[in-house]
Every structure is written in C-alpha cells, then in structure tokens.
Length: 65
Image 1: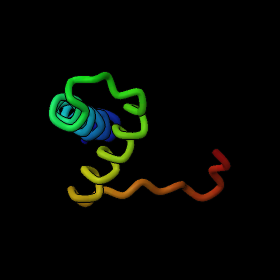
Image 2 (image 1 turned 60 degrees about the horizontal axis):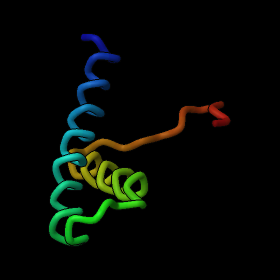
Image 3 (image 1 turned 45 degrees about the vertical axis):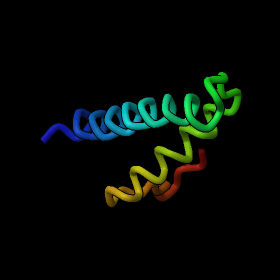
Image 4 (image 1 turned 30 degrees about the horizontal axis):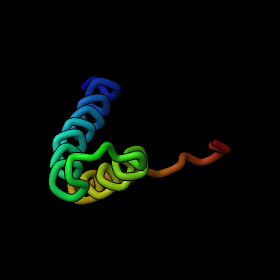
C-alpha cells in the first residue's frame, strides 16, 4: 500500500468535489459573480466532505505547526 499515493487520491477527490460544488455555488448563489472568499469556502467544503467520508485531520504528537 502506498500511503502517500492513497492520501493524494483522497485530497484530489475532495478538491475535485469542491471545484464542482463551488462552480454551482458561484452560478446559483452568487449569480455568476467571482467568489472572493473561495479559499474559505473550499476549506469548509473539503472539511465537511472529508468528515462525511470518515476522515479526520489530526496533528501528530510533537507537531508544532
């Protein structure tokens, strides 16, 4: 099992889902306007998507970042 490859796929999938959903958000909720707050929107969407799929972001012991 290639952990990095598997983790990359999870993040890629979440980004692709966010991109598709954000396009709908801009078109339907913002009337086609560019979303200046897109980074916050993506982060929230990806957090929900990952949590709904059973993933959890945790800081490892000793990680100060």
